Image 1 (spheres, rainbow, N blue to C red):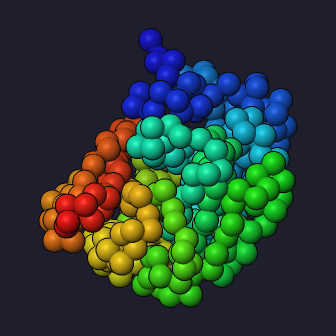
Image 2 (tube, rainbow, N blue to C red):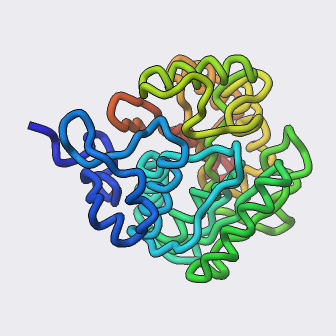
Length: 299
């Protein structure tokens, strides 16, 4: 018998149940063109079709949060909504489920899809700053925020002018954040990213060379990949240790954790947490660290 919930997702995740396609189509009629019976006779979409995936995302965001306008420019990352939502819910647990605009979050690399601020502001009423280094993605994220007036005043997008800085140039003098979040580039090169994409497409049964989710440099790859990116973030977080409560990032590869934990020991983080996440067969985790309490210990 098929499970009625998606195992592994956070209990508060609105997308944990199987999709109710009639409800989604009623909310977003454009989705109807992509919904067909799968091999089991159940309503579904072709997850290897980028147009179908985007249309499903639009329906999910409209149905769950009333977001009337969501889109991405051609070639940019189309995020899986349930997994992105899970990161937000686990961060809420880290903050004891605090809600409202007094809680401030910095999203490093918010992307053209602006998905974490849109979900976090809708779900918990948090106030976000979305930092983005790509000018096209930055402008698109701004358009998404402006197109959803229900989130007015909760999301600000800022252009990061440095390709290597995570916090400097974004966090302003005297500004404090309760936490930071990041979905770092996973691959070390465009070739690695392309190979990973083809593996994913083969698993989905998609056509060779057709991306169902897209992705640009900075979204999917950077020099040194995930490990180098997060180690640099850890080093840079020291300078802003008194300006942010928790620093967090997704870590796709568990093999990277020992070296990242060693880096956190070297910078004298006062507390480190590893929060496991899963969506179906896909496993990931959140690495969270803070420097709070170090000042008291020094005295």
